[in-house]
Length: 267
Image 1 (tube, rainbow, N blue to C red):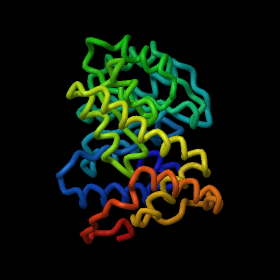
Image 2: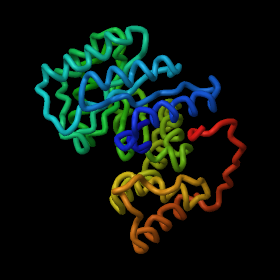
Image 3: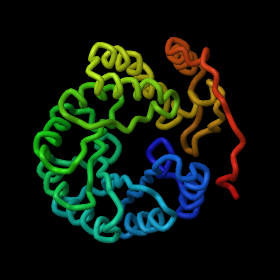
């Protein structure tokens, strides 16, 4: 239920079914993080409570969008969500290109003092802003995660602790390699992996969000279907450009091992 999961296009019941499906399918093997943000505080609390009751490990709460709350209203929004689920870890999620709502560093520092607000996914693409999040929360139990896939290595160098990447839907091995090489002290390999990943993230501009990831998955043999209207398909020319990016990443030479699912989100 993140951005690539088209949370903004799903009904509450569809969100519940998707979450239950993922939790049942993963069966405790990995943590499940759910995106539970909404325009209003009331709806964000409702979705967060639903996610908690279904058994998620943590939630990621994007800022409200369409409206433009003041920073004090934004702080109160997150405090209300956090107090509704005091035992559930919460990640702030800043994506101003999509929401039109910025998260100033002072606001993040204030919210970092809330016990169950444990970090932020920063998709601003602004390393000065990301760096300020890191600088102002250093020494606190708070994690700054890169949300812009072209800046994973840069975020780690500045003191970030990881990333949440859209491109991992297509090839999770490359962002994992960036992180593992970095923590092992192999900066050259980490940077080379970042260079390999960048063209896929840049290719997001070849179609209306989020169709590029879906098209990429379909191309490499993982059936993702179309995007939810009004988002349509990519042009033939841009699909070929995307195919070239995937080919240069070696994704058509890798074998995807599939297994039958135990349940269905439609069920």
